[in-house]
Amino acid sequence: MDDQIDHMVFHVQFDGDILPVESDDKMDQDEYWDQKEIHNKKMLALMNKEVISEFGKDPLEDDKRAQRKSLRN
Image 1 (spheres, rainbow, N blue to C red):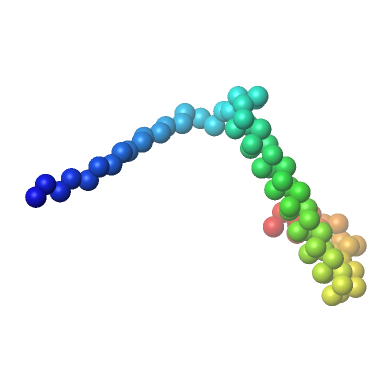
Image 2 (image 1 turned 90 degrees about the vertical axis):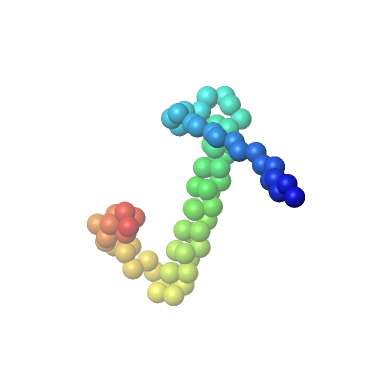
């Protein structure tokens, strides 16, 4: 009996990461990053709200150096 498997292979290569400014892919990417930033800001606001409700205030409120260090981490 002749056992053959039909298959197709695609090889794709991208040289670089440049997208044309007015392309649909660029617009999709911009929208993705905008939505991600909005989502992250909402999550941060919710976390801050929980911290304040638990501790009464932001524990780093008066320490600007600690705030910057916290943002880097």
